[in-house]
Image 1 (cartoon, rainbow, N blue to C red):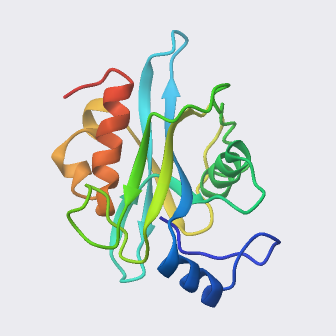
Image 2 (cartoon, rainbow, N blue to C red):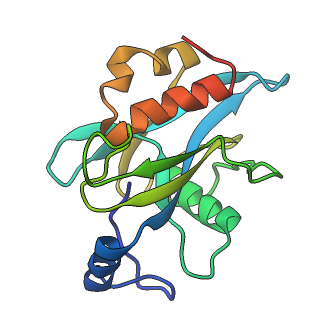
Length: 178
């Protein structure tokens, strides 16, 4: 999950965010960007390449916080544009039913999802993208994998904090069980 803050209304300062994270769960959205063919079958899974605060390189999903007074749909679109660029052309589903709700805890082992900074609740979506994706912000690259490649142990092991488990849930939701 991204730890970047912004200065626009609705964002907290670093100190305020730290205090909030210590006292209550924070709401996030996560997106698995996919390419689909003309019949709607998933042909590609987009995974970001990021450098963590500790200098490690890992694969990640699109994710970020929901702002105060921000609709979930708007947060999802904002983070997709932030990570994939303004011409990615995401097609957010008409129904905002997430494929799962992931609960991240600062303590390992409570769920498959771990974030040492906070307790977070994340609404996770599969979002088809039709345009040209150009990673921005803290994303170094976006690599497209076939569903089988995305489910491989090699890719799963490059995804910290439970993102590999979340990706496997997304694949199962799309009918790709490996």
